[in-house]
Length: 544
Image (cartoon, rainbow, N blue to C red; front, side):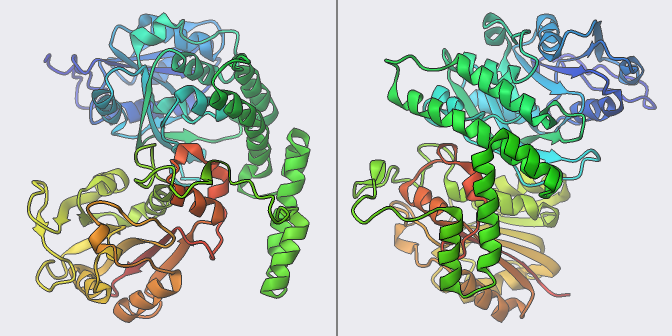
């Protein structure tokens, strides 16, 4: 391997290393004020690229002054021709095996390139891989949890339903495949990436991984903020790929569902713009999809009104206002669920990412600041690395029995002596407590293993299938929020734990059947119905 390209220590640089075989193309149009952060995120990669190219698409600001601070970065300037043209310019100049495109107002997470290459190593024949992303505001503050829809099954059908990729900077392409497909369509001013995904998916496989690899900055100059234009562009691209009359029935059905999805999606984005519902947002949403908007407002009003009356009366009120009357007796259509066997017998892992993982990962994303210092995780350190990152100073892994070469601790956490005392700043315990018969003893040991102020991040199953394999003989419990609250109060002290339920009847049905996350409507997973807890999550802190 060649030596890194270095610069004097008082200058910023991107240490380009020949052999990593990746080009990062950053496109900019009047976003010089963000460009430095984009370049810094490339410089922070744990596996640096071989080439970094900035394509200035006719900006009236001065991106050259920013690029000049980063020796080793190549700047290409062209008259304003649009994002597709700018990306194609970078594509034509790249000479590596893989290529990643980053908009100047967005940023990469440090493991973006490394995780993309690892995904290619697992699936070497695919056209591209993609990961998860997170939205941030203009200043870089998080606007929610990780956004990720796993690739499972037919990639064309999945993309016809909606853009499962979500953010272009999460994608790492095989450059030769993208070039052979013609790159980006310069006739498209929006959704050119969605068009590429669909075009490539028709001839090639696609793979994904759940690591958050990019930060999607939302601000008022985003193209994505023009919801009507984005809806129209998405529908126009979507129309290009309408399956022929004799095509596979799944693709025809998902295409029809996709038409509805895009209208609902951008109406929802308009309704929630700015993080709250305003008269302006309601008006904008109504112009995009009046029927969906009316139903959504009625649903929200019904939930609020229902809380002011008795539980039974509130339930009836919500049914009337939202129009969700039950079908007549004998007229329920069971469809694909009308058999005694689930769609998947492995929680959905054989189809993609299981539904319960959506809630688990969103919980950990929200508690990421607690994953720091010395951290213990069970089985492996995947969540600690993903959500703790550089905040983790020392990582321990516990396994119940010998055989895991990465385990630093072996044993049953309900037994005294397995865990060191007052040792950990954080313990990540997902979907494990229910496998221990003496849960109270396990919680006492976990409490004792935390340093004062240390935090236990815990998830347990509520409504769940029971494992058919390795854990079937020790799957002892499912817990309600009330049960977990009582267990934690008795060990950590009253009020030391925050317990939350996640799920609803839609999520529970999907999870019991073993559907993958990519097969469900993610907007429906956000609704919380305490009567249907799929996952119960808790944050419990040891008092100083």
